[in-house]
Image 1 (cartoon, rainbow, N blue to C red):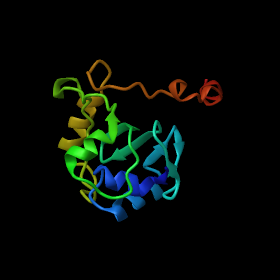
Image 2: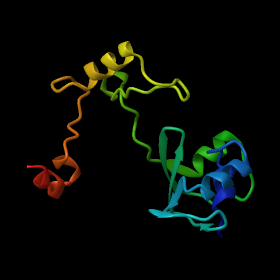
Image 3: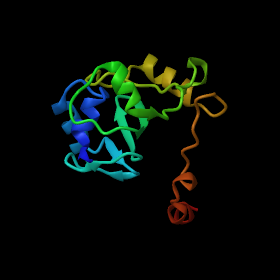
Length: 142
């Protein structure tokens, strides 16, 4: 027995609504057995489903195909969750972000950004031309 991918995602309570499941699949946030999936694609026992919800990537293996939405205890039996545990807060990489529409950084903001991205600081990433593979541009400049 096979059922639609979006209906199965909704039936096992990985998303709140069927329309949200369909939107996730159409947006490309769901992969079935490693390949981008379509909403009406059939789901079979043993298939691996990968979902990206927010900043969490979930990996589940189908153990039971459901056509209708069921309660949480029955939904938990329908799949095996292989999602790795999230990193502890002290191991997460901090990324400097600005709110959209905040405008140009002030001098104080710019100095704080430079302090974070300065060579030798923990958040520094080397962004030289060589690291991006622009060897010919570097050679032309010399």
